[in-house]
Each structure stands twice: as structure tokens, then as C-alpha cells.
Length: 249
Image (cartoon, rainbow, N blue to C red; front, side, top):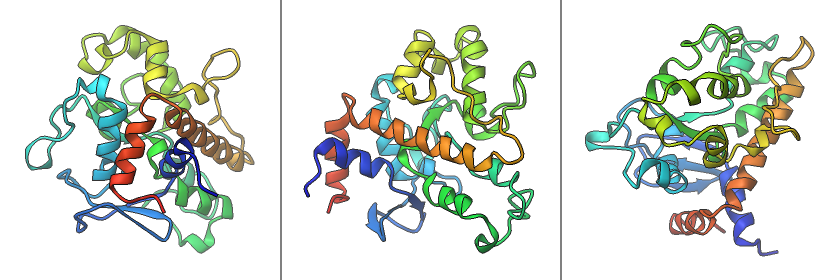
């Protein structure tokens, strides 16, 4: 069955990405997207060449049509850097048997199946967005002590943005790109992170037995964002981008 363009775009948005700086192109291998990276720092899927091209399409209004990277792979503007929304290590650190930190991480065979599945899936375009460098890639969650520890949890970070940053930090170029909370939600395709009352759905406050539920919620939100992007005004341009890279088969 031939998929519609929107479905094809959604499918690629959910493909796991492996970043390999030795690669000079983007291609599919065993149902994963392999991408090189021009960004100067260590290999990271959310700053891979594939992700950069994605950002420059869906955030062209926020970026005012400017590229993310400058000369020699540096950020052209540190206000706009790629970042992962729902992360892996924070949740893995809480799961018995997986190791209490990335340095202590055990072999995958020792992880519960739901954690292995999440680790395979979470590095995808539908789970990537752009943030100021110091908020996203370096000190996310360390600049506000009035909210419970964010610890890299997406729902808690959105609470921070809504309650403080989007209204009080209007001097930042990044936040000047949004007229307010609703515009922030719209431009980041975050409707799946809101409940029926348009409030941020909190899904990271789990009990000791709730880790599978957290991962189920996180994956669901990644899929919802993929659908939202695939049905947006950028769908055709994304399809052309993916088609040019020969990612459809």
C-alpha cells in the first residue's frame, strides 16, 4: 500500500537516528536514519545534519530564515540550538538494574524490555526542538528553584516556560520569537503535551512502579507531535526534503 505524503512524513519523523561524524550524507540503514554532523562538537543526533535541515524547515519563522550553523560548524546564534525533548538517561537512572548514571549504565540485556524499546526510539526528529544553548544543551532546569527539580523531564520544563520564562525573560532573542504561551505551543507543535483543558499534562511524577507508564506517555507524545508536524503547513517541504535524501522506499 502506498502511503499518503503526510503519512510518509510522519513515518520519517519517527525513524530512529544514528549520528556518525564520519558520514558525509544522510541515508537509511536497517530502518534507521544515519546522518553525518557538521556541528563542531561531539556527535549527537539532535545536532546531526539531518536534524539541522529539519529545524530550518519547521522553524523558519522563528529563525527568520537564517541558518543554524555558521562557519566551521559553530552555532550562528547560541539562542537557537537543537535539543532532545524527552531524554533517556534521566529515566534510565531511575530504573533498577540499568545503572544509576550514564557512567554506570549496564548492558542492554539487563534492562527491562520497555527501556530497551525507548532507547531505540527516542532519538528521532519528532522528539527534537530548538532552545537557547544555555537552557537546552548545557544548563536546562538549573535556573529556577521555585519549581520541583526538572531533571530533564519535558513536562516540568514546559511548566517552567509557561510560568516564568515565556513572560519574564522577554529580553532573550529566542523568547521574542513567540508572542506568548499559545504561540510557543503552536510553533513547537506541542498540542500533545496538553490535556483536554489545555493545561500541561504531567506525566513524569511517577511512583516506584510507574516507569513503564512514563515511557508509554513519552512515546505517545512523540508520536502525537509527529502527527501534528506531518499535518502542518510544513508537510510538503518536509516531504521534499526527505525525498531528496531518498528516505522513502
